[in-house]
Length: 312
Image (cartoon, rainbow, N blue to C red):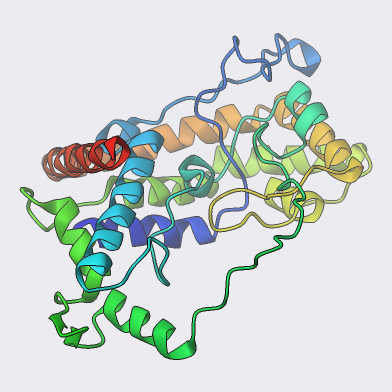
């Protein structure tokens, strides 16, 4: 697996199949945490999984993506393009946790307030139409931007385009001082561990119990993913719904949260993920330590780029 581009691409690919959101930092002090779940059980707090320590945090991942965008804009400006908005720029605003986890602890209190949404995931406010709309970019100029961004031409504006375009150059800028190869990607290993956990006997039995609980509440769903998809829809690629929860979602999520708590679904799934992640760590410990050292260099470079950009 190669460098930062492969790392980010792998996360995006795994995220495309995600139907549920997880919140890593929900605990008993959170306003969305239930002091006690239905049936006298304490609601599960979201927990960090073992592989989490080998990869960047959500905040660091956002810094990495912001730095990639800064590097891309800088490259395009050097090629003679003006401004800071170009086709193909790295997307730097997303909920990385939401894209990378298969299941989350969902409390009844959280469900009653937000459904399957996080508190910050709401519909964009309506705005007044602009009286001075931005003119569209001419097709010829747009094609030239794309060619420069992805290295489809050797020169633009009489200037040499870096190999692979500004997109690839931003990757090299991020990786400066680090090897270009990740020996193993901890987030790919995490996604594989979650997939294994999804099929573990303890988890499939808990899902079956959950489905029966939901049927008793008047809902017909085989899996929590089915409930989320039917009630809330599919999240965007940034991991957010960008809508406000409606009455159907609130009711479904509330019943779902009750059934997750009474069946212990999240605890059993989380324990299975921990088991498979620990096995992955034992098998890849040396490579994971090398990957950790590489990503620390990326994070250092990203922080420096973002800080320099914010000073200007």
